[in-house]
Structures are given as C-alpha cells and as structure tokens.
Image 1 (cartoon, rainbow over the protein chains, first blue to last red):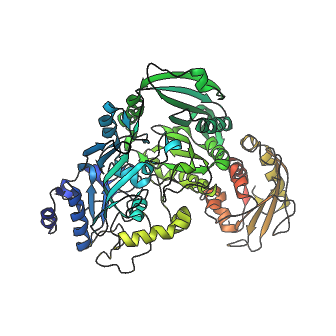
Image 2 (image 1 turned 90 degrees about the horizontal axis):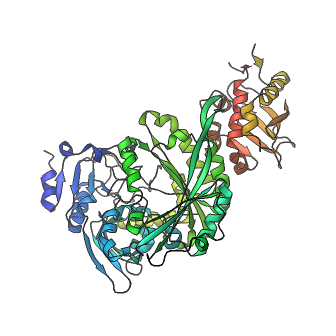
Image 3 (image 1 turned 60 degrees about the horizontal axis):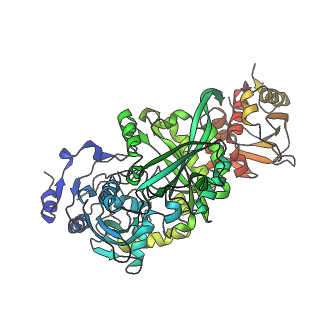
Length: 480
Length: 141
C-alpha cells in the first residue's frame, strides 16, 4: 500500500483510490493522445476536500490535475504520478435565486446536461450552452465555453456571477468581478492554472417553450458568411449553428496519390424560441437571407433543441469512433481572413477524416465577451473554424502533420486557437497566443499557484522562483 | 536517363512536366491570375550543393510559361521566392518533409506574401510533386 494513501484518506471525506483500482478511462482524456497513471485519484465530497487535497499535495510535492468529463485533448485532465482530482463527485445543483436576475449555484462537477434538465420546468436556461452537454461546469468555465448563442452572450464564462476557487495554496477563495477580481478573471478561461472551481453562480435567462429551426443550405462560403454576419446583426435569432459539410465527388491526385475529394456545402441552422400561441412568421424571419435552399423547418421543445447533439454523440459512441484519437483544431479567425483560410483548407481535407467528426463554422462577435484569457482576434466580427476529426489510432502519425500544419496556418492567418483541443505548443507559441496577456497570466500563476502544482504539463510557465517542495518538472512523477 | 539538376535541359523538362499535369492544372487554376505568380526556388548552398542555384518558374492559371535557372539570389520577375538550404529541399522533394511544414515552421523562407502563397497550398504541393517526379540526378546522389 502506498504510504501516503492513508494520510490522504484521513484528510478528506471523499474517496481516495490507488492505481490497482483505477478505471482505464481515467488514464487518458477525450483526445486519447496522452496517457498517464496517477498515484491517487481523489473523488472529493466537498470543497473542503478539494482544499485539503491541494494542501496535502503541496506538502508532499505532488502535482494535482483536475478532471471533469475530460473532454480536453491535450495534457489536461490526466496525471502521471500525481493526484487526479475527479470532480464528477461534486455534482450537486445547490440553489436558484431570482433576486437580481435568475441565477443558480452549482458545484464544479455538475454536468450542463443535468443542469438543463433541472432548470427546464421553470423555463430557465444558462445563456450559453456547449454543443456537448455532457461536460462539466467547472471544465468549460476553465476553457471558455462556446455555444450557439455565444454571438449574443459571449462565453459561458461571461455569464458567471461568482466563483468559489481552491487555489494552488489550498485556500478556498470566493471571487467575483469586484471581489478578488484577478482570481475571478484569471480562473475563467484560465486552464485550471490559478485554481479549481468548486462552486459557480451562473446567470440564467428565461427561455420560451418551443424552438423553430430553419435549415438553410449554402453552396458558396462567402455568401454563407455574408448571411451569417447579417443573422448576427438582425437581433431576431436565439441560436445560430453552421458547418462545412462534404459531398464526396470521386478521387483526384494529391501529390500524385489519388484521394477522395469533396464539394463542400455550408448548412446554416437558425433557431428562434417562441410561445406556441405566437409562432414565428417564416417570411419575416428569413427576410434578407439568400441561401441556396431552405431544406427544412423544425419545431421542437426548447429543451429538446438544447439536447439535439446527444443522439449524434450516442451514434459516434455506438460506431466506435468515440474511442479514436481526437485532435481537434478549433480556431477563432478574424473575419477578413476567414474565407481565405477556410478555402485553402477544405479542398484537401479528406472527407473520410470526418467519420465520427465534423467541420464546424461559427460566426461570433468579439465584443460579446469580456473574458481576459479567452484569446480572440481583434475586431467585432469573427469566425470560428473547427476541424474535429476522429482518427483511428493507427493513422494518427499520418494525420498529425496535416493537423499540425492546419493549426499553424490558422495562427498565421491571425487566428486564436480554442484550447480544449489538440495543442502541442512550444513556449513561443504559447506566448504568441496570449500576446500581452502572457505576462499577466504568468503573474497570476505565481500568485495563486506559487509551487506550480495545478494542472502541470500543459502550459509551459517559467519555473517558479522558489520551487518549494514541488521541485519536480510539470507532469512528471513526484518522488515523495 | 536522369537529368542533371541545375541544367537548362532539366528546367525545360520540368516546364513540360508541369504543363502535362492535370493535377497542377486544376490545383493552380487561380494561381497567378491577377497577380504575379512567378516563383523563384532558391536552393541555397549546403550539403552536397556547393553553389546556390535559383530556378525561376513563370506560372499563371495552372500553366508554366517558362522555367530556367537564373543568377541569384533574387530576380525582378519573381512574385514569390521560396528559399531553403539544399538539404531541406531534398527532404521536401523526397517527401520526408511537407513543403507546407517547412514554410509554416519557418525552415523554408518565403519572400513575398506568405498568406497569398498559403491560400493556394494545393497548387504548390502539386508543383513540388512535379519537381519531385522528374528523373533527376541531384548533387551528392
């Protein structure tokens, strides 16, 4: 038995487990690219457990990695030789409050899916929801959290009133935009580097009971983008969603080797919420838009709309692609370069790479977010471009140069990467990503995680000036 | 019979290969249309290449309108220059390194508008493939 096991277990109410008890799923994340075996997995019962675990880790020089649903694809939510804090044990929805605008308090391990279901009877919804609802509140807030209504409401982090955060010193700190504001803004989209979110007070909004979605199709990227911009500015839509969708045409030579190629189309789904006794006027809603075709109009209860991707993900799971390598390259591009960038990528993207994946396009408004560390290009109109493949592991090394180049290309085009995806950067690229926010980010790391024990191995921070007990390199096994 | 790299015969043969390639014709249909698409390949001395070599390709609309070695290191007719040490060119031409990787990592330098060049990545990959496909005797081979 590990000699620290009992000491740690004695400190907390929750459950500590050792490698002989780990489920193999805990050894990697959704990316299936990086693997690690933690020394302990801790399922905390309370925020006090989280604080006690961090304090224990600091005393013993152990790194702490935080895991929600582990939808990250790089060196997050896994641990090699440290403590993996499995926040899914903290999934209580605590309370709702209607004074001063509706809010809900939740623990960090709550799934958005559970929250949506919990709130549905009162017709309340979080303003922004990610496509995949089976991820945790703490997890997406630590990355940013983008969804179909981000063009109106920003990131999920922009809709947080207050946080409880356990910092790298093991202290639980309550913060909001006025109180401990640096920790608040440093934790939202802070990649888990300043602290662990144990509680969040989230803004809510009233929804209407039904949604109507117009399924538009475009054959021309630039015309689609024109309409996407128009739709964002029309102030009549509640959710907008779009993709690039391949229609295979045969094979063509690419550097002499024949490869399937596709004609790309651009589905654009525009959704408005409504009361059944006041359905939207279709002609009025679609006025000014110029799709190639209106394919379908769908009326569903709002909660069903919010959960629309669950059957898709279930299908991917049944098909086995959920277990593949996910090396998603998602970038927020400046509007003026977006079409050029997308048009240079799609012609050579083999449609087969998208079995169990897709290519996302999303129009966005830069000023809809106040987030300090969710980096995006300057300018009001932005375009998200995400190539989200599921790659059989044996093809990873073959696909990797293409995805590496895709990432570099989008960055060269002025884009900023979304950091839950496949990130394998040198320090130079991290610095370039954060730009003038890099030094403030490092300063917050030093302040709130002085021994650099939280979520090591992802962001290459400069080594702490006084390393204290945690002298091990980030992500490496600790010795104690 | 391999052609000697750096000769006018090799350059003429490359011009013919480019114009015979339907892959290039399709991939580069928009390249050089409305802008100067001529590319100077600068093979900087290194490894077995003792003296730098500079290949000017006149390219427009999926066609090669002329190819020839010129004195370097630059040329007034070139809209773009791709510059790298010869050993890196060999890696690219033998498929060990993608040209896009070499450019995006800065190992191959672009003189000209990099973004304009990368917008037509398929055209350049096809062009490189034409060069790589020529039966060539390279220095040191």
